[in-house]
Amino acid sequence: MAGQSVSLRAAALSGSDPTFDQITWGQSSLSASGTTMTLQTLSVHVVDPRQYPSSCWEFWEQRTGGTGTFTTNWSAATLASGTDADGIWTTSFYLPSTADGTWSLATAVECSDAGARPTFQISSAPTFTVTGHHQPRISWGYVPKPVPLANPYVTIKGRITDADTGAGLPGLTIGRAEDTYCLNGIGDGSTRLEHLATTNSNGYFAIASSRDNPMYLQCLGVYGTPRNNPDGFAVFVWFAETWFHYVPGVSAAPASSQVPHGTLDQVNGAVIGTTHCPIDLQRLHGATAWRRVNTGYVRTSGRFTLTAQPPSVGRFIYRGYYPARCLTGPQLQDAASSKPFTITGT
Image 1 (spheres, one colour):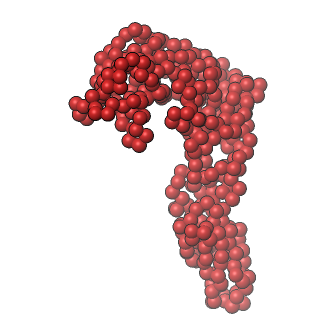
Image 2 (cartoon, helix red, strand yellow):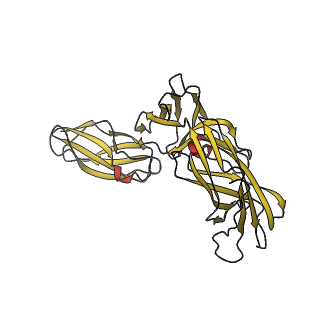
Image 3 (tube, one colour):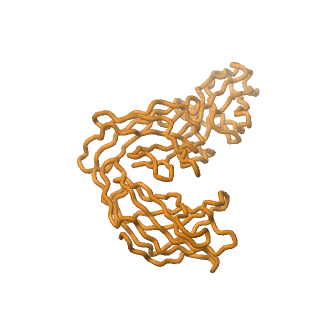
């Protein structure tokens, strides 16, 4: 919709809110293939009647329809003419083949205030279309699964294929990172995928093991060409964020391997991966049935203390058991138990 302008007003809570009109895209239709990016430009007239007009705007675009997997884009704008109170703001950004669909300006975000970041919704903006050919499709998994918190080293494996032909895509750069390295650093484009791999001739990849922090968000991305938008921020053909599935590590041992039956024996242990949660002592009944005989809590140190009481003369098998009911984070989902140990009642 090159050269076409539409006058709009942001969804405003009061008459003093900024307005956004004369929204113009550089091209009404674009085409992208594989991992090669295509450039789009945007111009927006902003009137900001507030006492302190914003000196920084980000514009967010949203995709509808199409076959792409890339749904949202944003870029930082610069003041091209006029003033902060009444001026023309422009930006440009790359879109990948996975942006296939119809795009429109959806939101303006004030970025000069790093704390509040006021957001203004925009409706009925002009649209443009992206046609994507040979879009990369990613399949991936990780091992081990679940990841033991006692040894949280994870390897990601998968394949990148051509959506048009089904063939593997060779020579693509794919990487992973965690926590803040997953995100665009405001102002410096500091997104970094720290562990990189290249797809082989059939599109397969394996990203080497790395020690992960179980409390961190994980991300995986495929770089396109070029790697950065004109505003300096990283651009990806494909990007995903997820939580890994972890299981805590539990250890437990009795103070004495044998005690007079009916008396208490102290059991000491530790949990790797969480604190301030219940921990059970279980005793084996028959060949497979574990029954709870005592409950305590994991201390801040990660350690716990329970008591066992052999009910009669003989050999009894116990274990420490960490129940799943306390695992609140999406990255911690499994219950876990220590290795069984014996206490003999004399």
